Image 1: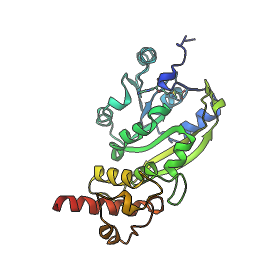
Image 2: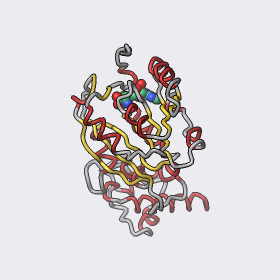
Image 3: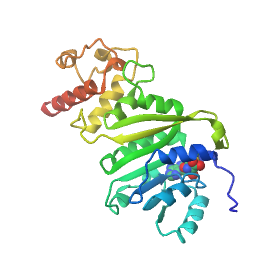
Image 4: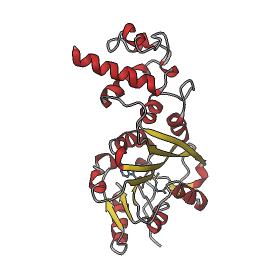
Length: 267
Ligand code: SAM
């Protein structure tokens, strides 16, 4: 048996130990023998052992130096396993994508302190990804999957739903981990949309408009979008400037972003 170092809190190390939950999470990715699978943060291998047995090739991205050493040793005898000992936020997934004939599948029980940045990092590669199955804090998954008009609906919901179909698969209690985290977790499956129904002409403008609109939830669009769009421009899209961001859908935000990009160019 391997003697692992104590779990590192700074790296969000809560290791899965419930075999039923582990099976359900991996099943959520629907791995085929021809698949290239990327696991972010394999830790001690709770998910990894199953993935390696099912996938054509498995890539691990791990930041903990002891775990990198452990996985490098394992990779010496497993020929369909590649280890990338780096911070996922610094890693260019193209290095893996270019080696794969098919779209890749991504899985990760993500450290909660960097879960949103990791999701936005992965978004850059959405066209090369078939599915992503991620474990996150339950509230974050609820926000991601929430529809307009709900309390949890916000910036994360709009930014992700413009690009992905999002499914809140199931909850995971703290008892499924060692050590148990203080919060409930949930599994989300993100499937990049093939024909994006509400395309945006400039991704950073979209980010800016959505962020600004939700910056003060109780204020109207007329107020929050001041400096970017005037009431007349908002109205020209059939959107009420007195409405609040939480009542708008993804199509509305895409329209606001696109008119903003257009105006910026003619200014
Ligand atoms: N997959 C394992 C499991 O389910 O038991 C471990 C999950 S644990 C919540 C998160 C894992 O991500 C740890 O192995 C940790 O070392 C790793 N990690 C933390 N920050 C990371 C980063 N920036 N880049 C890559 N891996 C990271």
